[in-house]
Length: 469
Image: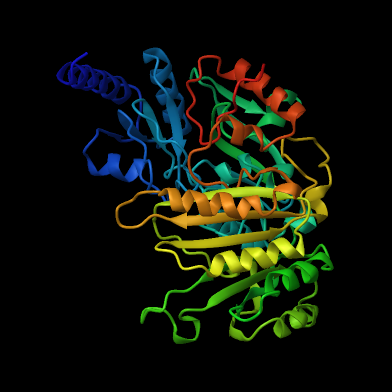
């Protein structure tokens, strides 16, 4: 087909999609080139954005059902997006459901639960739970969509004490690939309930989740920013400290070389800075003593540790939420060898024409134990999660050098790697990478559930479950 013929076909298809959607949904339907279309298809991740025929700004769960039904009738893909943090391969054509309007949160303080809409961020849930002295198993970045985070497992600030966010889901409202609504729980469909909690978004479009809340009103937390330029064992010192920490303490670190620029605070310019972040949910008065050993690891450039309400938990890791083009290689390891950590520090200090940052998260505790109701979260035996992020320049290109660095960091820990991290892998992932997020038996079961729920592969997911022979 000629280029002109292809463009005509695509225009005709887009018109058909827009007309069908506008006849069936109550919320706005945005055509390519409009402001609503641009807003809906864009997210935190700016590489490989979606290019759908239409964006449906869903006003109700019924709009999600109608959008899925239209896509099914026309044989097109359908996807949902809130913040676009974990955005993978962009969809081409089809229907994208923008869930930002579905952000309602309803707290039941007596049952210690919250029912959250598909568009709710963790900050929405935190703010609704806080007046009752309760907290969700939210992550380090409160601007992330709570539902998509939970479907992938969910690494929480309270994870070592209570487990993964997926472990504490009570039920889910799901729209199937054909547009049918389902309430899914342990009794209605055990296999699907198992798969949705940790298996990602390949099984349908989730419009709501009921999950547990926990009696945590305050934390002792924040970050120590350490000058690790001349402290070659800084990363290993954190590893040894974290290894001995109680389960009420969840910690992690990020490491990067700050550029020598006026825009950077003077103490950090041109230095390898290790940011050790922690959330202690035990008695607040014990917090300072637990952290004290870290103060001798390297010179402290900045200290933000304090007692704080859980409503301000987003300040603990102080992660930026500016839109950017980035890729991340996330792995799960059962051990961090001291020699590999020393090599990693040296690797980070090398000069490069692009920005990169390494994240480490301490796991274990309740995350290593099976939940009361089994779910699909993979590799519970992991002691740490590691992710290497590289940021594309103004040209928006992920270069070979960036990919080489990500692979090089992962390679340092290859002997102790259990698999890939669903929550800390950013960008397109292939079948092999998705497969590595789960044990073989888990992957086979997930594949069977997907075949049942979406045999024609209409659901466009960031982490599509591959067929398994």
